[in-house]
Image (cartoon, rainbow, N blue to C red; front, side, top):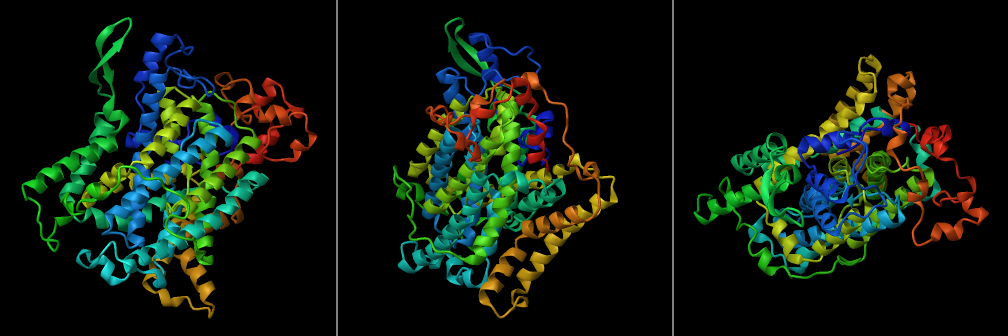
Length: 613
């Protein structure tokens, strides 16, 4: 899910982790459309086996039916990661027993993800890259909500005592949400500043694989408690969900299912559809959901809330679907006026830094897979800045999270060989429409708890493993590297756990400072990332040992020869071409110093140094 950090040139030279990780969980997109497109439109690569040559490049527009099909599949690829975030946050927001509000959060995060996708593809980095929620902000958000003053009242844990329409209950969760919103909005200003000012290249000189490996691993490991609690509500149903997802994504993913199809040449015929490869998580959830429904209507599962297995029933969350409106329009400030917590802002900033570095890796991988030249500095700066604007919008709308580039969807480009940004634009429109249908969000909010737990076992395990695979570019035979990674990872598990059990240990005499230290020191990825960053940059070691050397082999023939793909839309670049002052704006393309095609594809030594880690 998260790409390993490496120099910009190296990102082009070898497949990124996000491609491999996505294939591990099976969130891959069917490559059947590619074969169909090759036959019907004659757009073929030099060799079918050449994975580096897309059928449709960034600026190409596939046939309308192919656009719609792939846009839906991109949505399905992002489905699991997007709905998991509000379901996790609902516990910290005291919303465990308010499924209707959970459904509104799901609708809101889909709506904002679609909106940010349109902004990123149109005005941002201009690559076919989907935007969605980020797990990098979940840990600091949960750390903030676990502070003593934000702990949920005991009565909110008892479903029989919760009246979701009560002004008291509404104020309990909305107070927490408004504080989380304000913290995200203020913290997002850091990403906006770093992006549009061009500081991202400077920051990435000091952040290498030994910094990112513990950070990304701890994003998954820090959520083990939430996964365990949901899985333990019924181990049988959770195990069934996990087994089904593994079966679909790993064992059956290459088995096609015949489906009826029509074409002018073949008329009505059957075509092969790799359904297990396309949506294994959705299929696993659907089958488990159906089993839970059958067990519920036949009263196999206990109806007494005090008995084990009750949460596996599909009627636990009442008539949420019936109560939810067919149409809803999320809007900024829908939970009230956001407030700001200094401690929350600093905690969220730690997650945003991690998200920024991930996104740079995603840009380079996406450019290679979609047939575009290496992204120039102005495109990367603009992409990070627009992601900051996306986090600002997410905070304003009240998703409880930010937005970032979705690595799984970048990986899907390598499977479909369709790198057209028109497809991603259509997928963004599709997510906006889904976010406006209240019944859809309500349906997802009624997922039985153990089914969610089974899904979490897969997702969080893959995230943890993805972080460790960042180390592949380092020398792990080095005792230095083993020490840095091992100490950073283990300390990040021990220190936050002890502080949570002893919250009174932090007492500086200043309440605000105590809150800041509590959130930072109970956020595992901050502790691990800080220790990894400090040790990696101070303990002597060669660049090769640290995994910072850039690769020199770049497949130049697989990219478009021009960087015009990164130009601003609607003729904005042409209007600014004659303005000499544009050269000093880090996020604007400037035509005054255009390099030749050869220089552009080499990405210049200066560009490599700028983004070398």
